[in-house]
Image (cartoon, rainbow, N blue to C red; front, side, top):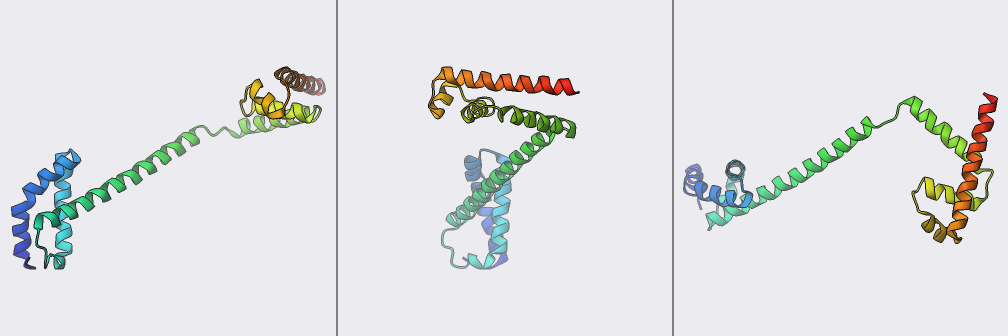
Length: 173
């Protein structure tokens, strides 16, 4: 091949249409294929010195176009991942509780801790696994190594302590 700029023009005139059709079949979109054709020839102009010694112009064009398609797909994946993360962040920002709500949550957790101090360690574990981890009575019984009836008793004991603490608190307010 020749390094002459007229040769790049000839290469474009002879193969642009063919490359566009090939790319349109690959990407399924005529406009995107046209953009890739232009990007391919821009790449050729940028690396014109490499044209010297190219024996198969179509294979050379396909290689450049394929690499550009791969780059485009990678960019779109990265862009999509970024947009997904951004939308998750927006969702999280929308759901951030107010300082007042946060204070209420902290106070509720403190009250639960005060109530749980009054029960056995197994009852505490059952309470946390059920109400905070969402496990069933059967799952908790397997973890702790007791019957499901005992889990029910532990949970009832914890709830009684929570209620008793609330009653004490209400008396002093």
